[in-house]
Length: 106
Image (cartoon, rainbow, N blue to C red; front, side, top):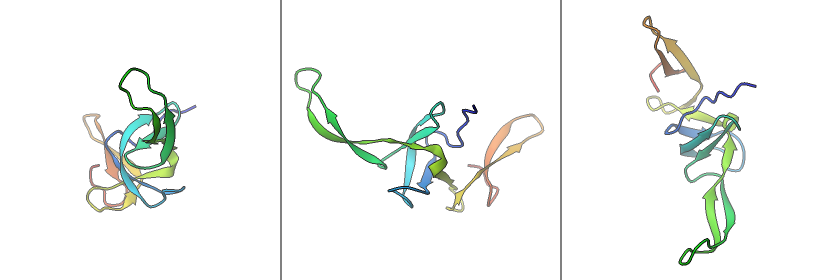
């Protein structure tokens, strides 16, 4: 099984399917083993939290939940469109992620 994910922490992405379709957000965490990402302020769920020590707040809190990486697409900072990631290999062997539409660096 291939554990590669096309997004990295800090990328701006748009959700292409599901309850939050069409909304943008910043990637907080990536889990390549599960193929999921956590996006800031998106896919919110209610969690029941128990107070662990004296002074901790218990109750129901809102938290971001993981979403499959195949359901998000990177937003190009230059053209502002959702795009796939292309790669450019230079002569010295270094690789760079580029926008598949406008060919600018991501």
